[in-house]
Image (cartoon, rainbow over the protein chains, first blue to last red):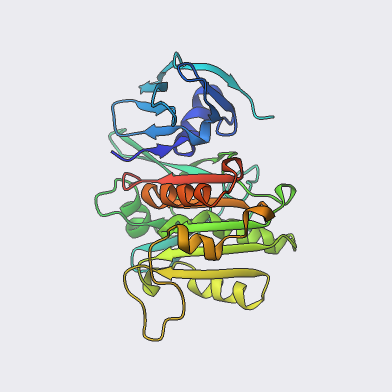
Amino acid sequence: MAALDGNAIAGTLVAVFDTELTNAIGACARCGRRSPVGEFAVYLRGPGTVARCRHCATVVMVIVEAGRVSCVDLQGLEALEPAA
Amino acid sequence: MVEIVEETARTKSIAFELESWFGHRAGQHVDVRLTAEDGYQAQRSYSIASAPEDDNLVLTVERLDDGEVSPYLVDELRPGDRLELRGPIGGYFVWEAALGGPVLLLAGGSGVVPFRSILRHHQAIESTVPLRLLYSARSLEDVIYRQELTGVAAKGAVDIRYTLTREQPEGWQGYRRRIDEELLGEVAWSRSEQPLVYACGPTAFVETAARALVALGHEPGRIRLERFGPTGG
Protein backbone atom coordinates (compact mmCIF):
# COMPACT_ATOMS: atom_id res chain seq x y z
CA MET A 1 0.00 0.00 0.00
CA ALA A 2 1.50 3.31 -1.05
CA ALA A 3 1.92 5.79 1.76
CA LEU A 4 0.70 9.34 1.50
CA ASP A 5 2.20 12.02 3.71
CA GLY A 6 1.27 14.14 6.68
CA ASN A 7 -0.34 16.76 4.43
CA ALA A 8 -3.14 14.25 3.81
CA ILE A 9 -4.18 14.32 7.49
CA ALA A 10 -3.74 18.07 8.03
CA GLY A 11 -7.50 18.46 8.50
CA THR A 12 -7.75 15.56 10.95
CA LEU A 13 -4.87 17.02 12.95
CA VAL A 14 -6.59 20.40 13.12
CA ALA A 15 -9.78 18.68 14.30
CA VAL A 16 -7.91 16.81 17.03
CA PHE A 17 -5.28 19.33 18.15
CA ASP A 18 -7.06 22.54 17.15
CA THR A 19 -3.90 23.84 15.48
CA GLU A 20 -2.03 23.50 12.20
CA LEU A 21 0.55 20.74 12.65
CA THR A 22 2.05 19.84 9.25
CA ASN A 23 4.85 22.33 9.85
CA ALA A 24 5.52 21.09 13.39
CA ILE A 25 8.60 18.96 13.95
CA GLY A 26 8.07 15.44 15.24
CA ALA A 27 10.90 13.37 16.69
CA CYS A 28 10.66 9.60 16.34
CA ALA A 29 10.87 7.86 19.74
CA ARG A 30 12.82 4.96 18.26
CA CYS A 31 15.43 6.44 15.91
CA GLY A 32 15.28 10.08 16.94
CA ARG A 33 14.81 11.35 13.38
CA ARG A 34 13.23 14.78 13.41
CA SER A 35 11.00 15.72 10.50
CA PRO A 36 8.02 17.91 9.71
CA VAL A 37 4.73 16.14 10.39
CA GLY A 38 3.92 16.87 6.71
CA GLU A 39 6.67 14.38 5.82
CA PHE A 40 5.48 11.42 7.93
CA ALA A 41 4.39 8.39 5.91
CA VAL A 42 0.63 8.25 6.32
CA TYR A 43 -1.73 5.31 5.77
CA LEU A 44 -5.42 6.09 5.54
CA ARG A 45 -6.94 2.82 4.44
CA GLY A 46 -6.98 1.05 7.81
CA PRO A 47 -9.71 1.41 10.45
CA GLY A 48 -7.63 4.26 11.84
CA THR A 49 -5.06 6.68 10.50
CA VAL A 50 -1.46 5.61 10.99
CA ALA A 51 1.63 7.78 10.57
CA ARG A 52 5.08 6.25 10.45
CA CYS A 53 8.61 7.63 10.64
CA ARG A 54 10.06 7.74 7.11
CA HIS A 55 13.46 6.71 8.41
CA CYS A 56 12.74 3.62 10.53
CA ALA A 57 9.02 2.98 9.87
CA THR A 58 8.09 3.17 13.55
CA VAL A 59 4.44 4.05 14.12
CA VAL A 60 4.54 7.61 15.45
CA MET A 61 0.83 8.51 15.44
CA VAL A 62 -2.42 6.58 15.48
CA ILE A 63 -5.71 8.42 15.26
CA VAL A 64 -9.03 6.64 15.42
CA GLU A 65 -12.23 8.62 15.09
CA ALA A 66 -15.26 6.81 16.49
CA GLY A 67 -18.42 8.87 16.33
CA ARG A 68 -17.63 12.07 18.19
CA VAL A 69 -14.67 10.64 20.05
CA SER A 70 -11.10 10.80 18.72
CA CYS A 71 -8.52 8.42 20.16
CA VAL A 72 -4.97 9.61 19.67
CA ASP A 73 -1.86 7.55 20.39
CA LEU A 74 1.46 9.40 20.17
CA GLN A 75 3.66 6.89 21.99
CA GLY A 76 5.92 6.67 18.95
CA LEU A 77 6.78 10.34 19.23
CA GLU A 78 9.54 11.52 21.50
CA ALA A 79 8.66 15.16 20.91
CA LEU A 80 6.26 17.29 18.91
CA GLU A 81 7.40 20.87 18.62
CA PRO A 82 5.60 23.75 16.97
CA ALA A 83 7.23 25.16 13.82
CA ALA A 84 9.90 27.77 14.52
CA MET B 1 -21.13 26.54 -5.91
CA VAL B 2 -21.16 29.26 -8.55
CA GLU B 3 -19.33 27.95 -11.59
CA ILE B 4 -17.95 24.77 -13.09
CA VAL B 5 -15.31 24.59 -15.82
CA GLU B 6 -14.31 21.44 -17.67
CA GLU B 7 -10.51 21.23 -17.72
CA THR B 8 -10.00 17.75 -19.20
CA ALA B 9 -12.23 14.74 -19.83
CA ARG B 10 -11.91 13.67 -16.18
CA THR B 11 -11.23 16.96 -14.45
CA LYS B 12 -13.33 19.97 -13.57
CA SER B 13 -12.64 23.22 -11.76
CA ILE B 14 -15.41 24.11 -9.35
CA ALA B 15 -15.74 27.66 -8.01
CA PHE B 16 -17.35 28.40 -4.65
CA GLU B 17 -18.61 31.60 -3.13
CA LEU B 18 -17.89 31.31 0.56
CA GLU B 19 -20.11 32.42 3.41
CA SER B 20 -17.14 32.93 5.68
CA TRP B 21 -13.47 32.56 4.96
CA PHE B 22 -10.32 33.60 6.68
CA GLY B 23 -8.14 33.61 3.57
CA HIS B 24 -5.68 30.97 2.52
CA ARG B 25 -2.04 30.70 1.53
CA ALA B 26 -0.98 29.38 -1.88
CA GLY B 27 -0.56 25.60 -1.69
CA GLN B 28 -3.06 24.91 1.10
CA HIS B 29 -6.09 22.65 0.83
CA VAL B 30 -9.60 22.25 2.13
CA ASP B 31 -11.51 19.20 3.30
CA VAL B 32 -14.81 18.57 1.56
CA ARG B 33 -17.37 16.74 3.66
CA LEU B 34 -20.42 15.07 2.16
CA THR B 35 -23.24 13.84 4.38
CA ALA B 36 -25.80 11.36 3.04
CA GLU B 37 -29.44 11.39 4.15
CA ASP B 38 -28.76 8.47 6.50
CA GLY B 39 -25.96 10.43 8.17
CA TYR B 40 -23.09 8.57 6.47
CA GLN B 41 -20.20 10.97 5.97
CA ALA B 42 -17.32 10.90 3.53
CA GLN B 43 -14.50 13.41 3.59
CA ARG B 44 -11.65 14.14 1.19
CA SER B 45 -8.92 16.73 1.03
CA TYR B 46 -8.51 18.87 -2.11
CA SER B 47 -5.85 21.38 -3.02
CA ILE B 48 -7.03 24.93 -3.57
CA ALA B 49 -6.51 25.98 -7.20
CA SER B 50 -7.25 29.69 -6.77
CA ALA B 51 -4.90 32.36 -5.47
CA PRO B 52 -5.54 34.07 -2.12
CA GLU B 53 -6.28 37.20 -4.20
CA ASP B 54 -9.02 35.57 -6.32
CA ASP B 55 -12.71 36.32 -5.66
CA ASN B 56 -13.90 32.74 -5.45
CA LEU B 57 -12.40 29.61 -3.99
CA VAL B 58 -11.66 27.12 -6.77
CA LEU B 59 -11.09 23.39 -6.39
CA THR B 60 -9.98 21.30 -9.35
CA VAL B 61 -11.18 17.75 -8.94
CA GLU B 62 -10.28 14.66 -10.95
CA ARG B 63 -13.03 12.05 -11.13
CA LEU B 64 -11.91 8.69 -9.80
CA ASP B 65 -14.33 6.01 -10.97
CA ASP B 66 -14.33 4.12 -7.68
CA GLY B 67 -14.23 7.29 -5.58
CA GLU B 68 -16.84 8.23 -3.00
CA VAL B 69 -16.57 12.00 -3.25
CA SER B 70 -15.03 12.99 -6.59
CA PRO B 71 -17.77 11.50 -8.85
CA TYR B 72 -20.34 13.55 -6.93
CA LEU B 73 -18.30 16.76 -7.18
CA VAL B 74 -17.49 16.31 -10.88
CA ASP B 75 -20.78 14.88 -12.19
CA GLU B 76 -23.59 15.78 -9.78
CA LEU B 77 -22.85 19.17 -8.27
CA ARG B 78 -24.75 22.08 -9.87
CA PRO B 79 -24.43 25.85 -9.53
CA GLY B 80 -26.40 26.97 -6.48
CA ASP B 81 -25.68 23.74 -4.57
CA ARG B 82 -24.18 24.15 -1.12
CA LEU B 83 -21.25 22.23 0.25
CA GLU B 84 -19.48 21.94 3.59
CA LEU B 85 -15.81 22.93 3.32
CA ARG B 86 -13.30 22.88 6.15
CA GLY B 87 -10.11 24.87 5.90
CA PRO B 88 -7.78 26.30 4.87
CA ILE B 89 -5.56 23.44 5.92
CA GLY B 90 -1.83 22.79 5.86
CA GLY B 91 1.17 25.00 6.50
CA TYR B 92 3.94 22.88 5.08
CA PHE B 93 3.27 22.72 1.35
CA VAL B 94 2.92 26.47 1.00
CA TRP B 95 4.75 29.14 -0.94
CA GLU B 96 4.69 32.83 -0.14
CA ALA B 97 6.97 35.70 -1.10
CA ALA B 98 8.91 35.65 2.19
CA LEU B 99 10.23 32.16 1.34
CA GLY B 100 11.98 33.55 -1.75
CA GLY B 101 13.40 31.32 -4.44
CA PRO B 102 14.25 30.47 -7.10
CA VAL B 103 11.29 28.11 -7.03
CA LEU B 104 10.98 24.87 -8.95
CA LEU B 105 7.55 23.28 -9.12
CA LEU B 106 7.29 19.62 -10.16
CA ALA B 107 3.79 18.48 -11.02
CA GLY B 108 2.65 14.95 -11.77
CA GLY B 109 -0.85 14.81 -13.29
CA SER B 110 -3.40 16.60 -11.13
CA GLY B 111 -0.53 17.45 -8.78
CA VAL B 112 -0.47 20.70 -10.74
CA VAL B 113 -3.50 22.02 -8.81
CA PRO B 114 -1.74 23.67 -5.83
CA PHE B 115 0.78 25.11 -8.28
CA ARG B 116 -1.96 27.01 -10.09
CA SER B 117 -2.59 28.76 -6.79
CA ILE B 118 1.12 29.49 -6.40
CA LEU B 119 1.45 30.72 -10.03
CA ARG B 120 -1.58 33.00 -9.68
CA HIS B 121 -0.36 34.30 -6.33
CA HIS B 122 3.11 34.92 -7.78
CA GLN B 123 1.47 36.92 -10.57
CA ALA B 124 -0.95 38.77 -8.29
CA ILE B 125 1.79 40.08 -6.00
CA GLU B 126 4.02 40.83 -9.04
CA SER B 127 6.77 38.73 -7.52
CA THR B 128 10.16 38.77 -9.22
CA VAL B 129 11.16 35.43 -7.72
CA PRO B 130 12.20 33.15 -10.61
CA LEU B 131 9.62 30.39 -11.02
CA ARG B 132 9.86 27.27 -13.12
CA LEU B 133 7.26 24.55 -13.57
CA LEU B 134 7.89 21.07 -14.92
CA TYR B 135 4.56 19.38 -15.59
CA SER B 136 4.41 15.66 -16.28
CA ALA B 137 1.20 14.44 -17.92
CA ARG B 138 0.24 11.37 -19.90
CA SER B 139 -0.77 13.31 -23.00
CA LEU B 140 -1.49 16.87 -24.09
CA GLU B 141 -5.22 16.19 -23.57
CA ASP B 142 -4.49 15.39 -19.93
CA VAL B 143 -2.82 18.75 -19.28
CA ILE B 144 -5.00 20.73 -16.88
CA TYR B 145 -5.09 24.59 -17.22
CA ARG B 146 -3.42 24.28 -20.64
CA GLN B 147 -4.66 27.62 -21.94
CA GLU B 148 -3.91 29.49 -18.75
CA LEU B 149 -0.42 28.02 -18.48
CA THR B 150 0.31 28.92 -22.10
CA GLY B 151 -0.74 32.49 -21.34
CA VAL B 152 1.40 32.68 -18.22
CA ALA B 153 4.43 31.30 -20.08
CA ALA B 154 3.91 33.76 -22.95
CA LYS B 155 4.24 36.68 -20.54
CA GLY B 156 7.73 35.41 -19.78
CA ALA B 157 7.45 35.67 -16.00
CA VAL B 158 7.41 31.91 -15.52
CA ASP B 159 9.29 29.15 -17.29
CA ILE B 160 6.92 26.25 -18.02
CA ARG B 161 8.04 22.92 -19.44
CA TYR B 162 6.14 19.75 -20.14
CA THR B 163 6.93 16.11 -20.32
CA LEU B 164 4.31 13.88 -21.95
CA THR B 165 4.91 10.35 -20.81
CA ARG B 166 2.49 8.27 -22.84
CA GLU B 167 1.44 10.06 -25.99
CA GLN B 168 2.89 13.07 -27.78
CA PRO B 169 1.36 15.09 -30.60
CA GLU B 170 3.19 15.18 -33.91
CA GLY B 171 6.14 17.55 -33.87
CA TRP B 172 6.19 17.67 -30.03
CA GLN B 173 9.17 19.71 -28.86
CA GLY B 174 8.92 19.04 -25.12
CA TYR B 175 10.16 16.11 -23.08
CA ARG B 176 8.65 12.69 -23.62
CA ARG B 177 9.62 10.54 -20.66
CA ARG B 178 8.93 9.98 -17.01
CA ILE B 179 10.70 12.18 -14.55
CA ASP B 180 14.19 10.95 -13.61
CA GLU B 181 17.58 12.22 -12.49
CA GLU B 182 18.71 13.10 -16.00
CA LEU B 183 15.56 15.09 -16.74
CA LEU B 184 15.74 16.95 -13.43
CA GLY B 185 19.43 17.59 -14.06
CA GLU B 186 18.37 19.48 -17.19
CA VAL B 187 15.39 21.30 -15.74
CA ALA B 188 16.30 22.09 -12.13
CA TRP B 189 18.37 25.06 -11.09
CA SER B 190 21.81 23.94 -10.01
CA ARG B 191 22.22 23.12 -6.33
CA SER B 192 24.47 26.15 -5.89
CA GLU B 193 21.46 28.35 -6.62
CA GLN B 194 19.68 26.64 -3.71
CA PRO B 195 16.27 26.43 -5.30
CA LEU B 196 13.21 25.79 -3.22
CA VAL B 197 11.54 22.73 -4.73
CA TYR B 198 7.91 21.63 -4.46
CA ALA B 199 6.82 18.28 -5.87
CA CYS B 200 3.18 17.25 -5.94
CA GLY B 201 1.62 14.21 -7.56
CA PRO B 202 1.07 10.49 -7.17
CA THR B 203 3.30 8.89 -4.53
CA ALA B 204 5.61 7.19 -7.08
CA PHE B 205 6.16 10.47 -8.97
CA VAL B 206 6.95 12.40 -5.80
CA GLU B 207 9.30 9.73 -4.41
CA THR B 208 11.20 9.52 -7.73
CA ALA B 209 11.53 13.31 -7.89
CA ALA B 210 12.76 13.52 -4.30
CA ARG B 211 15.33 10.76 -4.74
CA ALA B 212 16.63 12.28 -7.98
CA LEU B 213 16.93 15.76 -6.45
CA VAL B 214 18.85 14.46 -3.44
CA ALA B 215 21.10 12.44 -5.78
CA LEU B 216 21.78 15.68 -7.67
CA GLY B 217 22.96 17.23 -4.42
CA HIS B 218 19.94 19.31 -3.49
CA GLU B 219 19.42 19.87 0.20
CA PRO B 220 16.51 17.74 1.49
CA GLY B 221 15.40 20.63 3.71
CA ARG B 222 14.70 22.76 0.59
CA ILE B 223 12.43 20.11 -0.94
CA ARG B 224 8.75 19.99 0.03
CA LEU B 225 6.60 17.10 -1.02
CA GLU B 226 2.90 16.41 -1.25
CA ARG B 227 1.79 12.93 -2.22
CA PHE B 228 -1.66 11.90 -3.18
CA GLY B 229 -2.62 8.34 -3.81
CA PRO B 230 -5.18 6.53 -5.92
CA THR B 231 -7.09 6.33 -2.63
CA GLY B 232 -7.97 10.03 -2.87
CA GLY B 233 -11.50 9.34 -4.07
